[in-house]
Length: 176
Image (cartoon, rainbow, N blue to C red; front, side, top):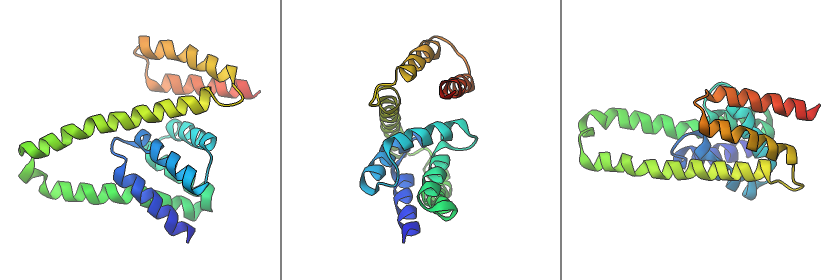
């Protein structure tokens, strides 16, 4: 039963989280609150691991959450759930895209999805920052790391991997 529930929850996330893996975070927060499968702190850790590992963030988070909830079978169920809507939608779009590519209503529909995707991603960023930096009890080291990486993130054109590596190294040092 838990495997079907995992598939269903992640199917809904895959269906409605337009904008990529980070857009799934608000939906995962809701799943966390309703099911208790993982805490918000664990979700922040899942997101950090998912961003640091190769592959799509949404798939990585689904794998991690499913595995934590119900082992290997749970990871598979969550991944199948989150990926199925995209596969079905892409197959449908591919079938009809050539016919409707120049349609102004289709174009308008795609343009209106962009702000929604940006809002979901921004919400995920704010919520992850609150969970990581402003958690109780206050973690001054996390706040200092956030401040130290924020300025170069805004002011430089460094590759995102540089920030991931710096954050990982700082996390390892902080745990020593």
